Structure formats: C-alpha cells, structure tokens
Image: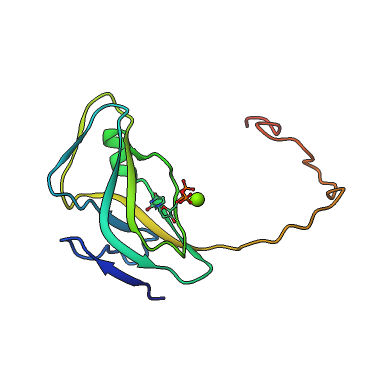
Length: 144
Ligand SMILES: O=c1ccn([C@H]2C[C@H](O)[C@@H](COP(=O)(O)OP(=O)(O)OP(=O)(O)O)O2)c(=O)[nH]1
Ligand SMILES: [Mg+2]
C-alpha cells in the first residue's frame, strides 16, 4: 500500500531497514541536539505529515536497542496516529535510565508500524457467554 506523506524534515523518508521489517524507523528532526535527563520526557518532531487510509492506524513504538542500551522508551507506547490526523508525527521519548541521553538530529529514535484496525458498534446485552476462563486473569493459570 502507499501512504501520502509530506516531508518537512531535512532527512530522507523513513525506511524499512530489512526486507521484512514491520517498523519504519523514525528520525528526530531537530535544529540542535536535545538532552533528556533521567526520567525526563520530551515530544520530538519528525517533520513528517501523513494521510493514512480509513481503517488504518500507525503505531509509534520504541526501538529495542535504545531501550536495552540506554533505557530510552516511548512513554505512550504504542502511540496511536489516527487516520484523520493531519499534524506532525511526533515521538514522546522518555529516558528511563539514571544517566542523561543526548538525542542527535537525524537519529533513529523510534519506529512506526502501520496496522489495520476495526471501528466497532456496541451491542448492549444483559449477559455474556460462559467460558472456561470466566473472570480469571492476572496470573489465574499459574506460573509454569
Ligand atoms: O505518539 C503519538 C501519539 C499521537 N500523536 C498524534 C496523532 C494522533 O492522531 C493524535 C492524538 O493522539 P491520542 O489520541 O493518543 O492523544 P489524546 O491525548 O487522546 O489527544 P486527542 O484528544 O487529540 O485525541 O496525536 C502523535 O503524533 N504521536
Ligand atoms: Mg485521542
């Protein structure tokens, strides 16, 4: 599928890094590097504006390498880009480590996965069907 995009950044359009990657890596579009102090969060622009088809969303997710090496995550992961959103795609980065982290212009800070979704209609009822699980959850099936 193709997606309409306006690129106001000084960087190339996000790319899949391997043939079958699910995520397109998003680059920070910054006039100067920014520092994230421990537990600090900052909204970082990508310079990208997209038009998703109806029935699709884009999810903004952390990159595992940055999470593992630097404790860097996306605070609202998975962030949701709605199909009717026309603003700049932004990434809410958070530093969950105890050391400061410097984000450079053009750095691949997160990834975007485009996914299908449903929009539902509610059917209010008095009862739900019986299942083996019932209301069990939160570890009800044990550990091993
Ligand atoms: O990581 C994100 C999450 C959201 N958005 C944009 C696109 C999305 O369509 C819009 C609204 O996001 P969301 O519904 O998550 O935020 P909200 O707090 O519910 O705001 P709103 O009241 O505008 O829906 O913000 C981003 O650019 N990056
Ligand atoms: Mg919302």
